[in-house]
Image (tube, rainbow, N blue to C red; front, side, top):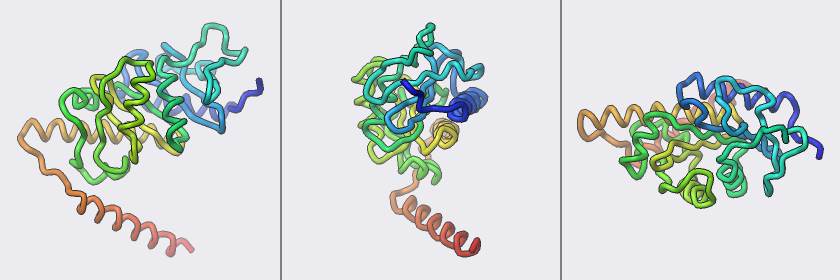
Amino acid sequence: MAQAFDDSARAALVAGARRVAEAGLVVGSAGNLSLRSGERVLITRGGSELDALAHEDCVEVGLNESAIPEDHRSGRQPSSELALHLAIYGATDAAAIVHTHSHYATVLSTVVQELPAIHYTINHFGGPVRVARYETFGTQELAASVIEALRDRSGALMANHGAVLTGRDVQDAAAKAILLEWLASVYYHARLFGAPSILTAGELDAVRERAQRLRGTLKVTAR
């Protein structure tokens, strides 16, 4: 079976994995990343440590099945969260996925139903970030729970588990993972001092409108 991913795609996955690890969003072999090209998916190897990921630790599978190409049959199996990644690709237009066990996101996933609009940059996820109900890792039940939480969103917390982000490419999804952890830490620390002020839907809309106007101005200036 011809591979859909060249060395540049594997390099992008490795770079994204190392960025996530260097940001402290995973511990040990926890966490996984993937990217999609048509009907093929490239995902990190099960049990791999993201800070030491190599090109050969990127496993290619089919979007609608989990058959592993011959060159990956030497003990390199895809992440145990393959079902989660495949389900998200099947239900969304995501081109890349990052799943982490980051500290503050995981802490909040045990005590809240959603990460509210503590800061306007939550718009990068489409609004307040929902918490997917707890299900056993690697199962279709977990995949269904996360897909529900990702409705109209590009990020979700996973109850008693971690976080999952989607993006237009691996670097975009990794940047969202870093931002989500920062937002989770801001909310966590604000809660220590009392009841934090939360932005309203109208205030978030105003931020979106302001950003759109600025983008329009920059396009006109660049001509």
